[in-house]
Image 1 (tube, rainbow, N blue to C red):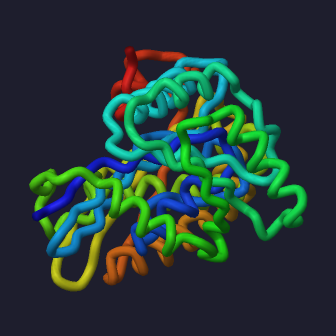
Image 2 (image 1 turned 30 degrees about the horizontal axis):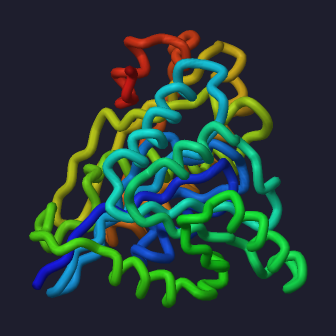
Length: 293
């Protein structure tokens, strides 16, 4: 008997979905920063054993869209409700229980098992946690509530056990040696974008999209050329920095992580280009791999 299924992770921004995904997959698949909207795509991480294949899916945080990029991000999150075999709805001990009620209704309406995870329980008291559990139980009568700390890996072993029990019988969906559905270039763009999120303040990281234009690999070295697209000339100047210092800093940090990810020496060249108002342009968004309805 072989089990396989799609385990989709949804929830509001900044509740720890990407940290949880990485903990469950055992690899650094999703980028993690303290900024909201870090995840923009639906990213799959695949865990294989002889008896099962779990296809985890990390999704962007659910928010009311202000521009077309955010509409695409919401599409990724909503689609995760439709094709899940097990749904992980993640909240935490910080956010308001009833935040984003329209999405909560959609979660309540799914037919598959829902595991409602209260993350970051290391940041609360037992008494407050019990109150939150009661509140959530009245809102989600069909869901199974599991308190966890993804960062500290508390209760993640129990969560994995429940996921394995709930998986349907099925042959594998992907090759048994697959770790993700995304190509190597995707992880390069995500690592560079993570460094930009960490390096620059305020609006700049959200106006950035990274595209890998060159990826040449031989036995010893990977040569990568990547373009950082921004929306305005002023943003280009900020990304490059005085004498190119900021761009060099981002490149150096990204190269270290890319080398660790691929286990190989990397030569990384970064360029900055202005793609005016790309977050609201269908053509640009499609070119960058976003799903527009």
